View (cartoon, rainbow, N blue to C red):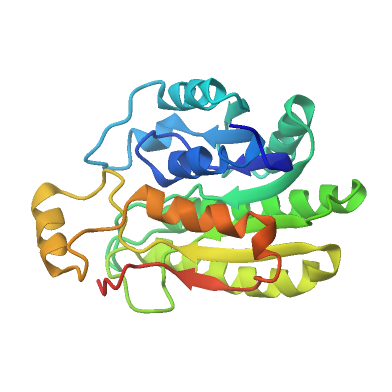
Length: 263
């Protein structure tokens, strides 16, 4: 399997082999020779997942990507640290070269309705989901502008959760930040279009990555039009397209990929 595209892909939030980030890395490894992932194990072990990742899921994913003949590197980083994006891009450039595709998949979410909402929860969620995402975009655009642009341009792909389609009670801090991601995506796409950078967001809908309790999973599968929930590979295939030269005319979009599910 030889890479079709030159350049490096940076994927944040690929801590768990069962997660969307890992699926994205595997899908893009079909086309790209250089992949860099970030992970943050302290969050994975406190996020209330039904599936508990192994202590070295990220290392095993990197080994898997290298086994495909890819150059793959990773860094454990807390994206709530405002200095992290610059340090991260320095590490990618030092090991793999300039970033041509940025996929903002890392997220922070803790249950909390109106009675449990605190300043600490709001700040922590904002720091990762919005500020961290925005500062990564800043680094990408700044460095992309300074380097020789690739012939197919650059790509920024943000992950969101469909807050514009309906309510998500009990996760107010999360929905506030993800709604902001959608707004940021649209305006950023217009600003960087002259540079040859496309910016899109993907809402993968209900995706079984290990967070759904068995009884709830069975209920939702029974209600789903296709008889199943989304899988990480469903999101990864869409993101693979958006990262490719074939998607050069697609920008400023929030794509809701739900398989017909209305939950």
